[in-house]
Amino acid sequence: MSTLTSTPDALAQRLADSGLRSTPQREVIYDVLLKKRDHPTADEVFARVKSELPTISLATVYNCLETLVQCNLVRAVNFERGPTLYCPNLRPHAHFHDEQTGATHDIDLPEGLLAQVTTILPQGYDAKSVEIIFRGKAQSAR
Figure 1: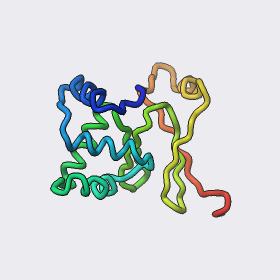
Figure 2 (figure 1 turned 180 degrees about the vertical axis):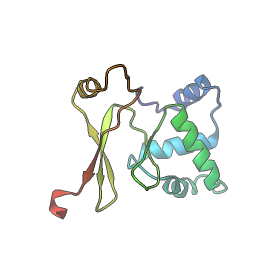
Figure 3 (figure 1 turned 90 degrees about the vertical axis):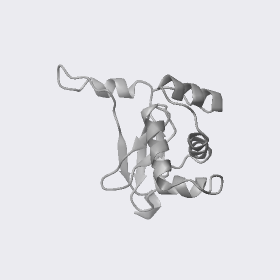
Figure 4 (figure 1 turned 60 degrees about the horizontal axis):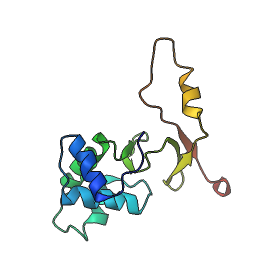
């Protein structure tokens, strides 16, 4: 995965590399994701950008998030039957989903772990991505 793209120029370049242009909506949504790294849903992103872009629609937020995912600027994180969450952390990492609070936390992985995990694939197969998700509760909540 690539490293974080946090400047407007870098965002514009990444979008341009994908044949797209930077828009005020994309910039604000991306900035919202970078400011508070808590894995928000599209509805939560919508609520956060309304103060800065009062006329933005939920459909525009969904479209912008999908564009950011397609350009590898943001990761879409999916849990069973739940809404998609958006994660701007592009370093290789796992997620811990707290089943009691609904919070999702990034977990840094030891160097080389993903390479080691891919060695157990069936012969003749290659993984384009690996997602590791832990589910549980805080120890005090058990």
